[in-house]
Image: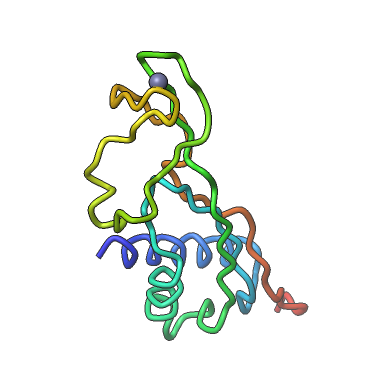
Length: 130
Ligand SMILES: [Zn+2]
Protein backbone atom coordinates (compact mmCIF):
# COMPACT_ATOMS: atom_id res chain seq x y z
CA UNK A 1 0.00 0.00 0.00
CA UNK A 2 2.03 2.82 -1.47
CA UNK A 3 -0.46 5.51 -0.51
CA UNK A 4 -0.83 4.30 3.06
CA UNK A 5 2.87 4.62 3.88
CA UNK A 6 2.90 8.05 2.27
CA UNK A 7 -0.17 9.06 4.27
CA UNK A 8 1.46 7.84 7.49
CA UNK A 9 4.56 9.90 6.88
CA UNK A 10 2.41 12.99 6.21
CA UNK A 11 0.59 12.44 9.51
CA UNK A 12 3.90 11.88 11.35
CA UNK A 13 5.36 15.09 9.94
CA UNK A 14 2.21 17.03 10.82
CA UNK A 15 2.30 15.68 14.38
CA UNK A 16 5.96 16.64 14.77
CA UNK A 17 5.24 20.13 13.48
CA UNK A 18 2.29 20.41 15.85
CA UNK A 19 4.45 19.32 18.78
CA UNK A 20 7.19 21.84 18.17
CA UNK A 21 4.66 24.66 17.68
CA UNK A 22 2.26 23.89 20.55
CA UNK A 23 -0.52 23.30 18.08
CA UNK A 24 -3.69 21.73 19.40
CA UNK A 25 -5.23 20.84 16.09
CA UNK A 26 -4.05 20.50 12.52
CA UNK A 27 -6.56 22.06 10.14
CA UNK A 28 -4.93 21.95 6.70
CA UNK A 29 -2.00 20.06 5.22
CA UNK A 30 -0.74 21.26 1.82
CA UNK A 31 1.33 18.73 -0.07
CA UNK A 32 2.95 18.63 -3.48
CA UNK A 33 2.98 15.28 -5.22
CA UNK A 34 5.31 14.53 -8.10
CA UNK A 35 3.94 12.72 -11.11
CA UNK A 36 6.55 9.97 -10.79
CA UNK A 37 5.53 9.06 -7.26
CA UNK A 38 2.46 7.52 -8.93
CA UNK A 39 0.48 8.33 -5.84
CA UNK A 40 -3.22 8.52 -6.59
CA UNK A 41 -4.64 11.65 -4.90
CA UNK A 42 -8.00 10.03 -4.08
CA UNK A 43 -6.23 7.06 -2.48
CA UNK A 44 -3.89 9.39 -0.65
CA UNK A 45 -6.79 11.39 0.83
CA UNK A 46 -8.58 8.22 1.85
CA UNK A 47 -5.49 6.77 3.53
CA UNK A 48 -4.72 10.12 5.15
CA UNK A 49 -8.10 9.95 6.88
CA UNK A 50 -7.35 6.48 8.18
CA UNK A 51 -3.78 7.30 9.24
CA UNK A 52 -4.85 10.45 11.10
CA UNK A 53 -7.62 8.79 13.11
CA UNK A 54 -7.44 9.52 16.85
CA UNK A 55 -4.67 12.08 16.42
CA UNK A 56 -4.89 15.88 16.37
CA UNK A 57 -4.51 15.60 12.60
CA UNK A 58 -7.89 13.90 12.32
CA UNK A 59 -10.31 15.97 10.26
CA UNK A 60 -7.61 18.07 8.65
CA UNK A 61 -8.02 18.94 4.99
CA UNK A 62 -5.42 17.46 2.69
CA UNK A 63 -4.71 19.77 -0.23
CA UNK A 64 -2.84 18.00 -2.99
CA UNK A 65 -0.98 19.88 -5.69
CA UNK A 66 0.29 17.79 -8.58
CA UNK A 67 3.78 18.45 -9.87
CA UNK A 68 4.66 17.44 -13.42
CA UNK A 69 7.46 14.96 -13.94
CA UNK A 70 10.69 16.16 -15.54
CA UNK A 71 12.89 14.11 -17.82
CA UNK A 72 16.36 14.37 -19.27
CA UNK A 73 16.91 12.37 -22.45
CA UNK A 74 20.26 10.66 -22.88
CA UNK A 75 19.87 10.41 -26.65
CA UNK A 76 18.60 13.78 -27.92
CA UNK A 77 19.23 15.93 -24.87
CA UNK A 78 15.57 16.85 -24.38
CA UNK A 79 14.90 18.24 -20.95
CA UNK A 80 11.43 19.00 -19.73
CA UNK A 81 8.03 17.68 -18.84
CA UNK A 82 7.28 14.05 -19.33
CA UNK A 83 4.23 12.76 -21.08
CA UNK A 84 2.84 9.84 -19.21
CA UNK A 85 0.45 7.87 -21.35
CA UNK A 86 -2.96 8.44 -19.69
CA UNK A 87 -4.07 5.02 -20.89
CA UNK A 88 -1.47 3.25 -18.77
CA UNK A 89 -2.70 2.70 -15.23
CA UNK A 90 -0.27 4.07 -12.59
CA UNK A 91 0.27 0.58 -11.15
CA UNK A 92 1.88 -0.42 -14.44
CA UNK A 93 3.42 2.92 -15.42
CA UNK A 94 5.56 2.84 -12.26
CA UNK A 95 7.52 -0.08 -13.74
CA UNK A 96 7.67 1.23 -17.30
CA UNK A 97 10.61 3.30 -18.53
CA UNK A 98 9.71 6.91 -19.24
CA UNK A 99 9.95 7.63 -22.95
CA UNK A 100 11.39 10.86 -24.26
CA UNK A 101 8.46 12.87 -25.70
CA UNK A 102 10.72 14.14 -28.49
CA UNK A 103 12.57 11.08 -29.82
CA UNK A 104 10.77 8.23 -27.98
CA UNK A 105 14.04 6.98 -26.53
CA UNK A 106 13.87 5.08 -23.25
CA UNK A 107 17.31 6.16 -22.07
CA UNK A 108 15.91 8.91 -19.93
CA UNK A 109 16.74 10.13 -16.48
CA UNK A 110 14.04 11.41 -14.19
CA UNK A 111 15.12 14.84 -12.97
CA UNK A 112 11.97 15.97 -11.19
CA UNK A 113 8.59 14.89 -9.90
CA UNK A 114 9.86 11.88 -7.98
CA UNK A 115 9.01 13.22 -4.55
CA UNK A 116 6.12 14.31 -2.52
CA UNK A 117 6.72 17.13 -0.10
CA UNK A 118 4.73 18.78 2.61
CA UNK A 119 4.57 22.40 1.49
CA UNK A 120 2.83 23.83 4.54
CA UNK A 121 0.72 22.94 7.51
CA UNK A 122 -2.01 25.08 9.04
CA UNK A 123 -2.87 24.54 12.66
CA UNK A 124 -4.67 25.97 15.64
CA UNK A 125 -2.16 27.09 18.23
CA UNK A 126 -2.98 26.89 21.90
CA UNK A 127 -3.10 30.35 23.48
CA UNK A 128 -2.29 29.24 27.01
CA UNK A 129 1.22 28.18 27.92
CA UNK A 130 0.33 26.65 31.26
ZN1 LIG B 1 15.03 12.16 -26.67
